[in-house]
Length: 356
Image 1: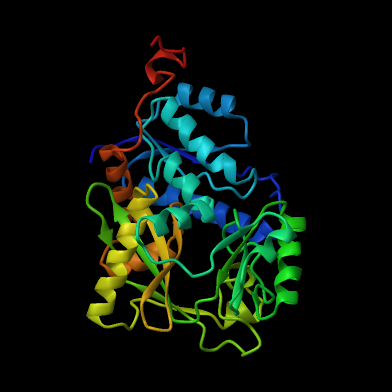
Image 2 (image 1 turned 30 degrees about the vertical axis):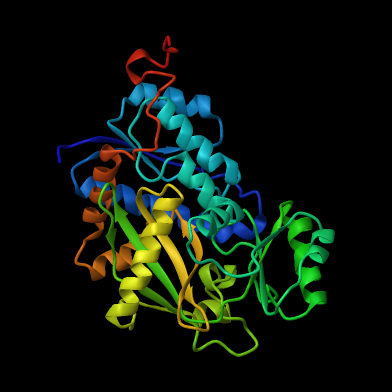
């Protein structure tokens, strides 16, 4: 691939603060990841301009108009400005007419609004946890017949935000308390599901028209004390001093037989495509009591930090970090078939509106 001028867009100035104070850990890792991506792209001889975005899309437009990048490497996450902005930024970049890495706005939006994506997956005949319900007010809890244990999420959050030691509940009282906490603290609905207790796998995916499934990673909760639920909570992901972080491990490649690996991989690819995923992503899956895969979540904007997550699985497939980034760029130029390439502004016209 020829040398490209790459605009690396992300959403954190050095003085930015996340909307939720609990999210300072993921904000720190976001900045670290951006530096690593820039280094990796430069190793590929690309010209890289890092563009932190503070929320004003007109500023982004002016920066892109000045730079004229060949591609936008989109790493806008929702640490600072909320879930809606993630898909708005992606849509805006495409409206400006620039090729963009990763999933289009459709995929990003669906993967962030978990109840919508899970409903879509269920409609497509794919397995999701039983008793999946959206709770918009406490009274909604009385409309369901619950089978415990249950897990209670913040319906629009990511990176383990809202998940803690009280998220897996065994009683109606605990369910109500956790749902009330989500509604009040996060100002969004609670997502309640049956808690699937089996083994948990992360399925990394890369590619455009042809999806490559990376070696499976298994989340190992076996060293956790019994009083702590085996989940990827915020502490397990980000709080290095916590018991959850120190005693939760990731095994890659996972120790699982070929038949089960094939079934998990097939399920993950179908789920990724169903929500409009493209370029790269991760699907989290658990095995139910019958040993069957159940989809927990489709993440169309997973961590790209070197040595972690997707990059760790890629390494097991013999793919170096720069090669991983290059494959993501290649997929962007292939373009998802469901991404309407109808730019309102032309990159060649300094952002002037196009006639229709």
